[in-house]
Image 1 (cartoon, chains in turn red, cyan):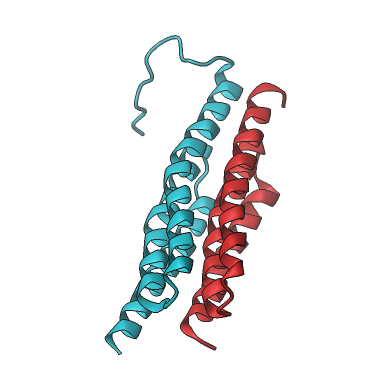
Image 2 (cartoon, chains in turn red, yellow):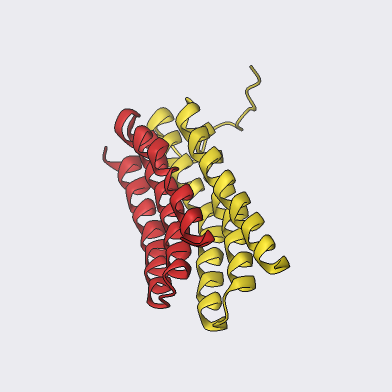
Length: 83
Length: 107
């Protein structure tokens, strides 16, 4: 087990408060929890890519950071207009 | 040896900042307050992770992709935070932009 894997495991602990917010808050609180999860998930995937020495995983982190941004904007617009 | 210590310190800072910010999101009551806690992982933690990758990674192409991820997180965080805060304001007040200048509320 190397330092990257330990850091990825430690950073994964941040998913617990985010899940708590997503399960218990109001609609905008849940959106904030989702956005935080997307940021943390991108960083965890970067760390896992380095831990497993798989260059392909960097593309997954890159894709997730882009899709997390787009998804967050769509949800914000949806909450603003229709919900 | 010094490089490994630098990597460990940078990763420790990144993990600490991320976990504390996640706890901050769970503790704060208002969505406006919660939104502030997305910024530290997207800026400080991302920069620390990329710096550690640059020290430890031998393939500079992979480190370049990590820089791109940090760049996206850093700059798009401001956009998405503004969009979420605006959505919350519209849900509360019903209109955007505000009809009168916003006031800073001090408790």
